[in-house]
Figure 1: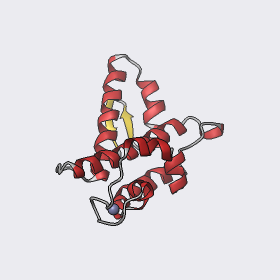
Figure 2: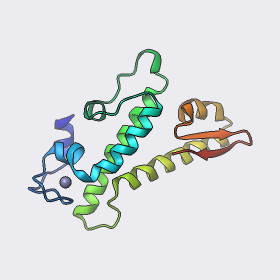
Figure 3: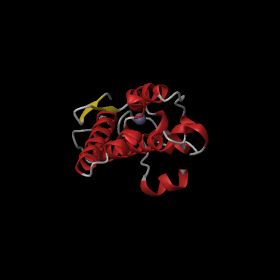
Length: 152
Ligand SMILES: [Zn+2]
């Protein structure tokens, strides 16, 4: 994983957010700017009865056993969080305005859920959508009139 991230994440000397010496661990785990995103992930994972940790964040969940219905969703959320960190860091280096990784993460989850919901509604597969995206109503629920209610 570290090697993979290094290929896509050139590391300058200092963090563009806090000016501390920037390492790969700093970029994805340690920078203070990540704390609001990690608090949100902690809350989401608790609702799946999971404990958020740096190890889980980097290595994600093995998909097996009694939680295998929710594991792909959790892993997707962790991937979207890493993407949000990467994109906002790139944005900061390019002097773009939206560098809030928590907001970018939420927006990417919302747009993914909306796209999946619209696809499911048009293909009459809302049951499958619910099984995949509305687990325990952590992110959303489908209300009886076949509309979407976001809970994140
Ligand atoms: Zn930093």
